[in-house]
Length: 95
Image 1 (cartoon, rainbow, N blue to C red):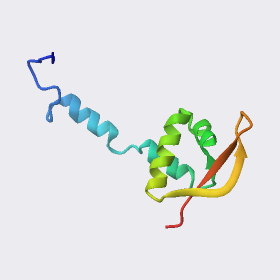
Image 2: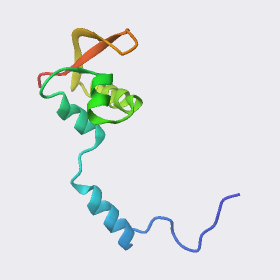
Image 3: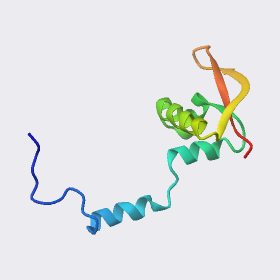
Image 4: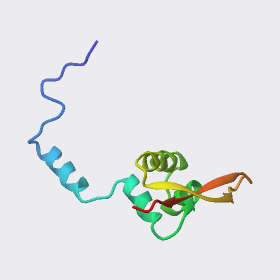
């Protein structure tokens, strides 16, 4: 059974909707932040997560999106994770 409300859940002209829009408007997405971080030097997923203080799973998903968009690629280098496993070091592609 669907919950019925006496009002629309999303209201385009409500003050809270406007406030949320303006707070988010000029902020970079996590994907953009990851991409910008790779400008200076190639990094592995765990290094990005540690630097940005975000979950590794969030970084992995953003890297995959950037890879699909052809904005990042495997640098050919590897680094060891804290568990002793090889990790891909990502770099920005030349656009």
